[in-house]
Length: 198
Image (cartoon, rainbow, N blue to C red; front, top):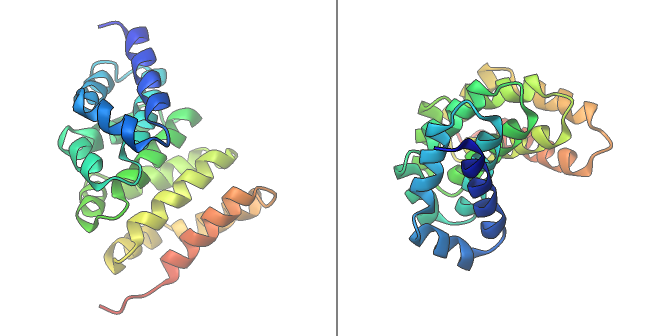
């Protein structure tokens, strides 16, 4: 297929789905999950497809267990991880990938575990390190960490073993003038320091 068509298609889905539960539901009924995952697979080497594909996933999954489950079943997890690895130097892919992980993970221990098994912690930390100068990547990475470590000492320990706590602290200091990074970093640090004792 044509990479430019795939890029424009993923971008269109991302824009249509953004902050609209109704449009997101329509898009999912029309087969958006399968089409986006297929585009990400067919054009894995294209950074624009990777960026817009991941962004579309995040917008479709936003605050919806049902859509998140559908996207996971369609293979979104593997495609996000592949995009983050293949386009490790691209800040747009980094931001979109971290946002997609956060949105898919939110509200489900099962999805969090699936994402962690697929290598989410490694990819998030590597991404945040590689793009330390990008505030938007720092923000989305912190949000992904916060969601993944909630309700799980095991996942919390996995991130802490990768020195995620120190990394988030350093990024908060680096982006001290960015209110969004400060808020996201504070939430991530609080989440990593909480012990459930079970």
